[in-house]
Amino acid sequence: MLTSYFYCNFANSNLFYLKEQLNHPVFKAVSEVAAQMQLKCYVIGGYVRDIIMERPSVDIDIMVIGSGIDLAKNVATLNGKDTKVKVFKNFGTAVFNYKYQDKVWQIEFVGARKESYRTDSRKPIVEDGTLEDDQNRRDFTINALAISLNKESYGELVDPFDGLNDINKKIIRTPLEPDITFSDDPLRMLRAIRFATQLDFFIQVPTIESIIKNADRIKIVSGERIIEEINKIILAKKPSIGFKLLYQTGLLKIIFPEFIELKGAEYVDGKGHKDNFLHTLEVLDNLSLHTDNLWLRWSAILHDIAKPNTKKFVKGTGWTFHAHEFVGAKMVPDIFKKLKLPLNEKMKYVEKLVLLHLRPIALVDEIVSDSAVRRLLFEAGDDIDDLMLLCESDITSKNQEKVKKYTTNFKIVRQKLKEIEEKDRIRNFQPPITGELIMEVFGLTPCKEIGTIKNKIKDAILDGIINNDYQQAYDYMLKLGNKLGLKVAKN
Ligand code: ATP
Ligand code: MG
Image 1 (cartoon, rainbow, N blue to C red):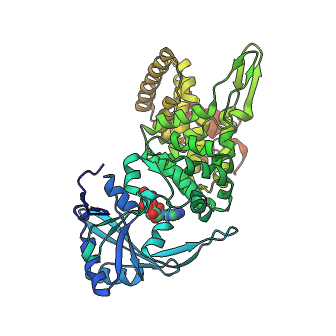
Image 2: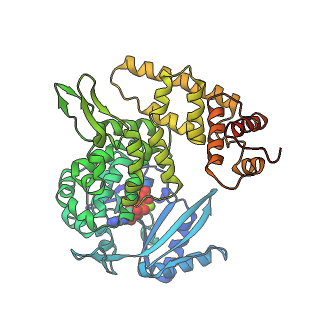
């Protein structure tokens, strides 16, 4: 937390100066140009919050009482010919990039706005506004802070809602009545939870109560905006904070009902199973200590997603979730589609990890069989390390003895994977005999025997009957052809 801001107490007002923190050269340039144009302007929003919290940030928002586009163009001219200004006429904003201290900073200019919304529409009616109007339409007090870039008050903090104090007290609170702020743009409910998660702040009681009350309004927000906030929650240091809040407020039920199904434990004959919602969140937090890979984190969220659908109580055995990894992997595309997540190789990756998430555990028992290790390496390919991370994060037992045992076993599995990979190079293995070659050798036109031979060669390599080697595979092919009664046309 920044403690070096300059504080001066006049008769009736507290003034904070953050001049020292405005060290990016763009601020002086904006100040000069704005003075010439006789415009008032301020640094506002997340950048101000982040300099006070001493979080590095390269996104600077400049707010102008007047045209943000004109100011941006004039500042850019000052900055040199190469500065390209991107103008978004509909939003009244303009952006350019600025290289400074080996980083690319994004400088965005926007005219002060006054917004009003209708209850049935997501599109706000936007008009030009004053500094006060603009601060009123901000989502939270900590995001409504502005620093003056005007000559006579350069560096002065304009903080009408006591946002500085809220930063110090780690509080998320809306600047206006929360019902007004949230009904104007219901996405702000998700943003409250996102900031609480990223910054480890509390959401003030009236604000959280208003989220609970207005949760249903999230339905008018587009899936694309929603998933952006959800992904930011998932990428936070401890994502469970956000998901617990999403659950408590009722938002999760609307956005991602499949996840809610994991909540709770059922009991039969006094035997219960674990709460798979809390378990999943624990896995997600564990994993987040080791990776920033959003899709690996999504795999953690979805790894047990089919447990509710596959749950059975078997007398004598207890609760089973038979085939939940297969059913879960099959659920991934639908969930991705509904949540507006990408339907590309990222989705395939998540499907694969969900499908394979029990396999390394199985290897612990079968540790003697190289064949099982080879098969896993073949199926996981380059994602094997990610899969191992997911599995290790999946150990959430409260029993420390068990945790120790599993952790040790996974170390053995990792060792085994390493040895077999070094020996057999299976990770990115492509069967050495192609279908074309089989056709050529036996003089075949496309037929099912080609697939049979190819698969048998692959299995023979994975099972260790032959090595991952062209000549051995070729000889094996001849043998298989012979058995199938095929004649060699060309050797
Ligand atoms: P980060 O960049 O880390 O996501 P941020 O606070 O900069 O955090 P942005 O989404 O970049 O968030 O938005 C910049 C600023 O614009 C915010 O600080 C806030 O003042 C305002 N803002 C953004 N979205 C909204 C919204 N939906 N409602 C009200 N104000 C918003
Ligand atoms: Mg930002």
